[in-house]
Amino acid sequence: MSEPARLLLVEDSETQALELRLLLEGHGFSVERCATAEAALDHLNTRLPDLVVADHHLPGMNGDEFARQLRLSLRTRALPLLMLTGARDGERQGLESGADAYVAKSADRDILILRIRALLRERLGGGSEAPGASGFRRGRVLVVDGSATYRTFLAGLLAHEGHLVSVADTAEATLAALDADGAAFDCVTIDLLGTAYDGLGLCRAVDARRAADIAAREAGTPTFHVVGIAGSTPAKDFLVQAFAAGADDVVSKIDGDVLVMRVRSLVRRKLLEEDNRRIAGEFGARERALERARAEAEAAEARAALAGALEQANSDLATANRKLTDAQAKLVQAAKMASLGELVAGIAHEINNPLAFILAHQGTVERLLTEVAADPAPADAPRLLKKCGDRVGAMRMGLTRIQDLVLNLRKFSRLDEGERALVNVPDAIETVLALIQHKLGDRIGVVRDFSGRPEIHCTPALLNQVVMNILGNAADAMPEAGTITILTASTDEIDEIRISDTGPGIPEPLRERIFEPFFTTKPVGAGTGLGLAIAYSVVQAHSGTLTVEAAPGGGACFIIGIPRQAR
Image 1 (cartoon, rainbow, N blue to C red):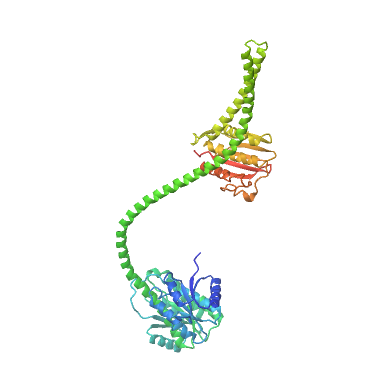
Image 2: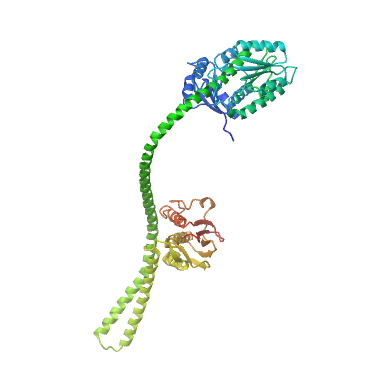
């Protein structure tokens, strides 16, 4: 889809500027506005629009001087200018100022849109180059009129203006003149109401020839403008038909001077465009040679600068990556330490129970041994020794319980196993369950279904940190009682671990946010909001997925997916 035409509106009245802007934007134009001619000239120094619409009466520099300034600059001399004039003396204000067309402020707004579209159509291809165009030449005009009297009269007026004039009295003669070799006209005037031919039909045929010229513009064929001539002040409906047929302007036969000014304006624009292309061609070669010299001089300097810049950029990137890695490691460590703090508190409770039991039995054994030592052969020595043996056996059971807890904690940390390896999934999950047993207690049951592959290729953190965070959250979600289901499954492409609970679940609007860092649904002080975020990053490091959905029992179901090809 092409971009909308860009218009610059120069209007000092805020009310009229707003009205015009809404009108123009409603017809698909892109509009920028300046309140004064001076501000408009500054604006044109930065970027050029496709067309300028300016009020003739402006504060400071008026419309006449603004138009002259535009025509003095090579940058803006061919820029289309539509002048908004007063109802009285509008023709003189509009065209003698150097504008390409004018519209009275009191005129129908549809006429304003038609004028703008016609000027934009004239501008098609205006920036292309015309090799070999002379620095100065006379304008070439084709006058088409069925009346010999008016045809001679109009040709004389235009010749007096200095134009080279050709004439045609029929549609066939007109098209033959346009098709003839070397017949490159700047303007064609057509009597739209003549009886010798269909004026609007001929206008459409001439516009078709012009369209072919536009297609062949790269070969140097110039474009001509079409001026339709009507009997008196044309009605709006007739103007619409004429512009639709391809006319760039429509004027009345009544005032020959006005017609001559219109043709002069169109030819002047055509010659200015050619002059621009010629100047651009002459200066272009010089500029290209100069640019080549500059490019060669700057190339070596640029290569040296680029090498230094690349070296510095690589150094900066390495520094940034190192800082990011350090920050990420600290974040992971902080989350892990937070979870370990809670974990250690529970393990301490688990150790205290058998430890208290051992200390109590240790006192009993010491007392019995003291009695035996005091009397080497007491009558009940066998009983005392058997009692000591029972107490030592009980102490051994307590010590074994403590040893198992320490071993499970050691398996969980796996500080010396940061690389990927084959990890036994059931064993790893059982280790995590043993460590958080204090959170599960007797109130939460665990259902296991290890149907998937027993071993997957991953880092121990995947099954330690990730599974523990999910199980811990599930236990917190069921303060009274509930069930946790752990299921493993495998396909040819992926290994899955599904952990679901019978808690209240996670509302659908929050499911997209639970993996965000520092987002938590727990009360203030009860969670860091980092557990699931770290778990998500660990799974992503395995090119896997971590998602959540509603569990069959109404709770939450977390799904860890690890691709088989992740090695």
